[in-house]
Image 1 (cartoon, rainbow, N blue to C red):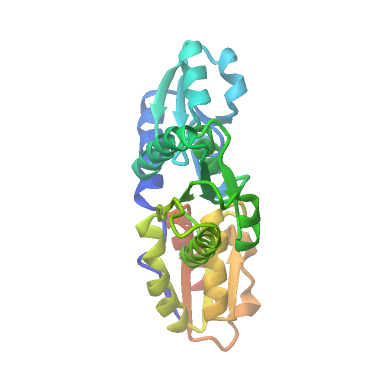
Image 2: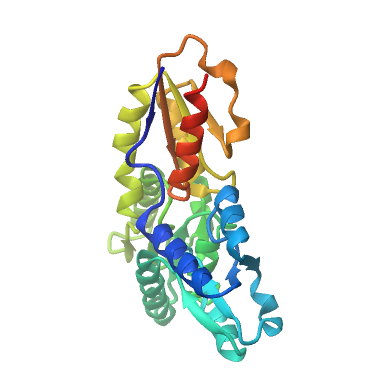
Length: 288
């Protein structure tokens, strides 16, 4: 049986940067506090916990004076930076550079829309920490939509600026953009609608390669945390290309019966999946 790890799977550069920041600090200090899960992968969190990483929420800052606080890749709203300044802590900002640029774009668009009674719209998951942060740069007044059906929340007679969570589905974004454009044109041929495809290229460019990888293997083992937005999206792509795709979080979830009469196995994962975990799963499958 041939077992292949997808060469394009694993940490994106933003997650890799944050993990490296955490590891560097933990080499010099016994403890580092991170606001929220550093990455949507419990196995990687457990590994870092052993080195001294502790996950906390922003409300805990008053009890962490003289400590170092890490902001994860997803970014934080302005209110979190304010709380850092109000407490005697040192910030290590691991926000992805792409997310930082998006935050600034949304901040600028919000100022622009306020002047003309317009709307900032974000295509993303309401519960995702990145979206929570992005919405903060629009004074938490942004309209959050997760599907085409939810565009009815928008007032199409007013100016609109559309953005996307960096790890969302490019195809769905395009559908939403087209539908908003159509609706605004129904109100006026001079409608003020501008859209900004802010989905990370490293995420969207993976899709064609992932489809090829799924077709090249009889079975696909997709490794990611169950809370990973990017993981859910990419796993659905795997499943659509190869019905024998299995979503697992850890080694213990691998079922030997999956591999009976199988000659080729592909292992892939989300942008939050550590390479070491995929390698560990590959080593186990190679024993069957």
